[in-house]
Length: 202
Image (cartoon, rainbow, N blue to C red; front, side, top):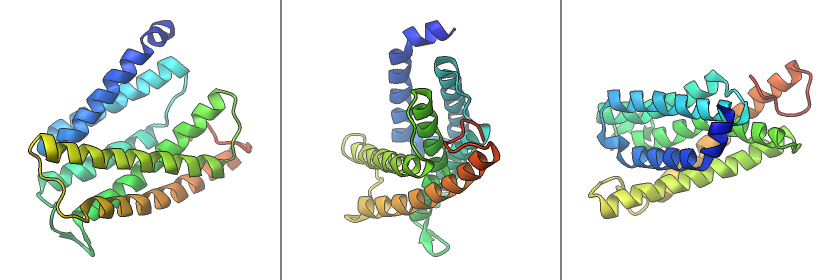
């Protein structure tokens, strides 16, 4: 199985990238059930690929956090909460903040696991910092997807001239909070395992 996955690595990655991008492009128009099922299947496929290709098992808790991030967006669309207030924030701001808090820990863990797999040693602090830069870049790519939806697919996801910058502002706040959370959790795990480097299990 590992040899087959190794040979098909790039086609698999391209298909997963295109499927994920298409999902992000249209998820706000899809049903809650579809988004939930797709999220579960995509995460299972991701888990299986990483396990088969690199012999690395992603902690289920981190995958569950990513699924929770999908649900934050899906539930907001299902209950028509976007465009309205959610406590002191607009729901869009709350979603960008919360989603980044939920997805940053898995990004930190994956970067650390990848570095360790390839024999590189980097402290947890630096790993967390570079993971934060990575997830912020992905957040910017998502804003480009929203722009494509607006320009080419008749969507309406950019509410004002400040919408994209405001989204990125709350993305950044969520990433900082998620990075701090990931650092504390993974630091505690590394101490528990008696290691100085990032643990490959939680």
